[in-house]
Length: 151
Image (tube, rainbow, N blue to C red; front, side):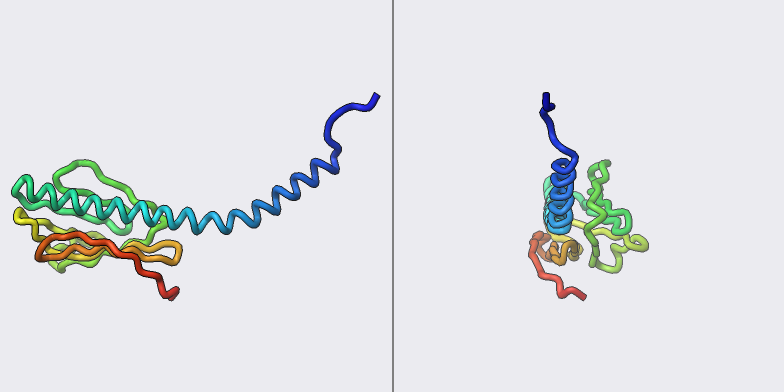
């Protein structure tokens, strides 16, 4: 009586096809993951900046949004929690020279009237850039997408 099941040849054929599919799929999935991380990180940073501005307005006191670029962390001075950002996303902070707190660490300060010291947080991954700008006069936070030039 002949047993039911798969032959060794059939198993090897299925494993070979699976390996080929993985070799094709993985390089296409990684940029999609990095792009999703970039979108998520830029939303988190913009949300943190908006929260800091809202806190300054509602509490009628200065509030700092502090970004630690090498550690991929940010914090709002009115909250003890420190928020992390994906390490695959490259960060840069452009702020007033008086707000630089050390190598790769600086703040954007919001005032009780809604204005700020101004600045820009640049996030980059998967060949794309997200720019989050803080207007110094109004404290308004705006976000834009910029294609990277690849250099």
